[in-house]
Length: 195
Image (cartoon, helix red, strand yellow):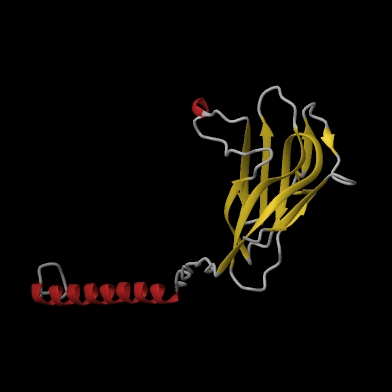
């Protein structure tokens, strides 16, 4: 008996055994809880790397204008299926917009420029050209641009010229900034180029 009454005296070695047992139980419980939480939590989704389809061939279309009078500027909207086709390049034609607009305008010496923008996710091409300065437009027939497409399979749909889509409009303008109607004798077409 101890001097504090009838309480049994816990020996130091008994205390250490009880303390170690409590610590072991708590540690085991803690580790088991973390393991259970880790197993129950959802695995992060696998990241799927999308691989662009392989281009198996290509073709070129020419954007041509026929029987136009005083063409100073133009803009065309071309639609295509981006699951079947990919725009590989856009080159200027020989009519209006015969040089690609340079990044450094100081060295530019041309009399007309070509501008282009491809919206590949939407399958749209916005391409245009203009004469520069105060000059008359060009008249007659000519090629405005060449567009080369790559195709992913041999059964693709042809790209097509559209008049108005996505807020963009196909338009021809004369040197007074008046719209030239695209009907009757003046036509604008996409034609496949046979090299």
